[in-house]
Each structure stands twice: as C-alpha cells, then as structure tokens.
Image (tube, rainbow, N blue to C red; front, side):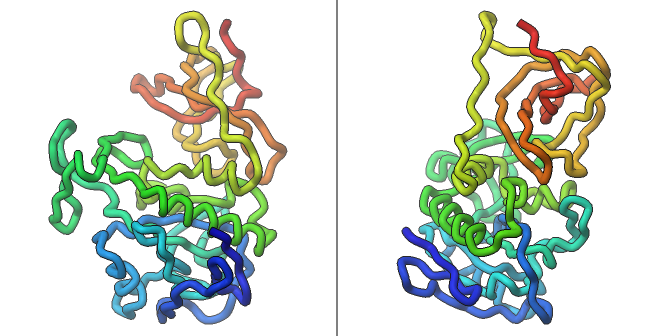
Length: 295
C-alpha cells in the first residue's frame, strides 16, 4: 500500500479513497500539528460508523474512518476543523480539533464482563465471543478494567500508512508524541484508543526509529531502579501534563520496559515501571535521568 495526500485528500496507490463528506465541522482551515487516533466505540458492520459521522445529528466527525478490513473512507480534508476531540488539551493548548485531524478506527470500545468469561457485552448490548474475537481482559490506570477487541492487522497497516503520509505532508507534526490518542488528550473522559492499540510501534515506524527495546533483566529476572529525588510518575513518556503522582526519594521500582522518546524536548530515555504509589500498585513512566539502576 502506498498512501499520498493531494489537496488535503487521501490517495491509495494513486487513486483517491472513498470520499463521504461530513457536515460536522467548523468553518475555516487548520495547519495540522497533531494527529489523533480514536475508536468508533460502535458496531463492526462496514459503513455503520461512516453513516453516523456524516449524519448532522451525530454532532461529531473525523477526517477518516478505518474499517475492520482496512478500507478507508475520508470524511473531510485533513486541514478541516472536524469535531473529533471535544474537550481536550495537548501540551497546554486546549481544543485539539484546531490542532489537527482525527482518524477513527472501527472497534467496539470497552466491553463489560467478568474476567475469565466466554462473552463480553458492548455498551449497546451486543455480545461478542471471547474466543472468536480474541478478546483480552486488560486493566490500566487510564482505561480501567474491561474486555477489549484487538485491532486487525489490516487496520494497523492502514493507520500506519496514513500516519506516514500525513506526517510527510504536514511538517508541524514533527515528533512522536504528536501522534496521540483520544484518551491522552482527554484523560479521565475518554478511553480510546483501547489498551491494545500499538501506538509506540506506529510512532517508531513513522519517525524511522527502532521500537523501544526491552531492558536486559538481571539475575533475578527483573531490573530495578531507585529514584534519586522526589520524582513524578507519568502516564506516558513525556513532560506533558500527565502526572499520576509523585514517587518519594528512594522509591524502588521494577522496570517493565524502556525506550528513547522526544516530546518537543531533547530525546531522553524513559522507563515504564511498576511502583507503589500511596500504598497502591501503580504503573507509569519515569525519566531515566532521575533514577539509578540497581545491579
């Protein structure tokens, strides 16, 4: 697949993708500097989400929708101000609709059901077989606990190809953290994309970087770090406004994985750690410059 953008319209292998204009956008144009991924949190039937997002009653939209088979419908030019983000903040700037396009990926979103169940229930009442759809029960601080449906390989390849084309067209989308998700810009209000979305891999591929590699484990099977100052534990590897809480000086944490990231600052190494925060287990990111590795 080869994606390109001409006059803010998306082309695949030289042909324009299906274009279904939505009325749900504001007047004027934007100069994109952020790309936001979303879930549709709706039915899986092809065309269902597109039909809703071009309906004036929806009062919501996005620039494009990726179906389960990887096919794409574009609903507005990439420099249009679509209504995809709602109340949102990116690096201190409110109103992410004005900062860049949104891409909706067809997915039912968070589903209910006890751990170990054979079926999970979507918000509209439809049940999905855990075995048939490879559903996973996952808990994160940002998403809570629930059943989640993996994205298809076709969806991930389409999302990656589109992101590469968009970043190539709009130079203000200049760092990995400018590829973001709805829950990141609307924390506590939204949980999409779901925890199974491979955002870091997409960021790495788009910006030509190796995937964050796992750290070598020590003899006990784990690597630990200790904070050398009171240190913010963060939801993602960035000094954006994303603090979960503060780890006191001398806190010992188990490293889950590490990687090099940039967010409008010089590149830095970050650790995803498992820690105890206010007496409760908590996962989050810490800057490597403020911890020491324990051998």
